[in-house]
Length: 286
Image 1 (cartoon, rainbow, N blue to C red):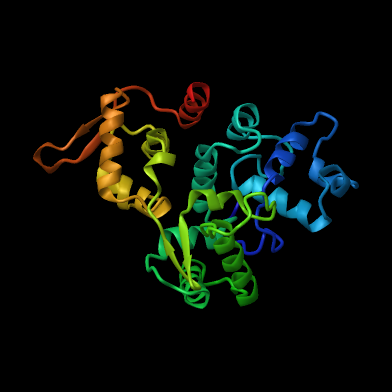
Image 2: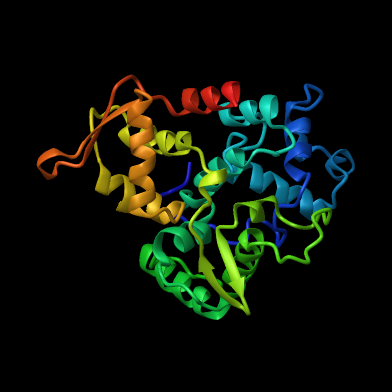
């Protein structure tokens, strides 16, 4: 378990996640032949990747919430993805993985800071790096932040999320699957966050986040859901209007009751909401 104010930079070994890697990871972590496939002497041969790429994949599987901390077995989410979306063809899986990594301040510190603490748009890499350096230094003043490692994180993060250019080859396996989310736009070296396309964003993602935030409580304020730390505006760059549209859909479907009377703006669960059960419901009914 991470210590309070612990940070991690460059766990990815300078490799952004690539098309096909996660399917390899799901296949081999499930393989009963291995107790911990990532620590096998011939792990590179098993995965068909270089040694540092194997280390990178182990890191990505962990921070995307697909495995337990040491990579020996799939998490509940990982098992669902392995069963229903092994080749990561559904953007829903990518959105949930994005949620996991962007909330992991201890193991994916730069991702957390970029999505939770970097509000400005039209920034170049050096400006983003400066903001992240400042925020990490504020969060963990006792830690020495390696500028080289932080620069590597910024490069990998932006390459991972940046929307594909029109002339990018969709068959290029070096392109990150997260570029499908089109969450970050690169215009001449200036990066901005983009609102998700409603066509590729399910209201069950919002329900999943509500369940995660409720944690057994009997209500949740809409403001906390949208604007709080790890809220929907930060993690997904969703506008208040978009969130309220999703809340109305979830209300109509009987999952929640939204009370906007007398300025309350509160969400009440109408049934027990369990994050893993919501993920399973999505996959079983897609």
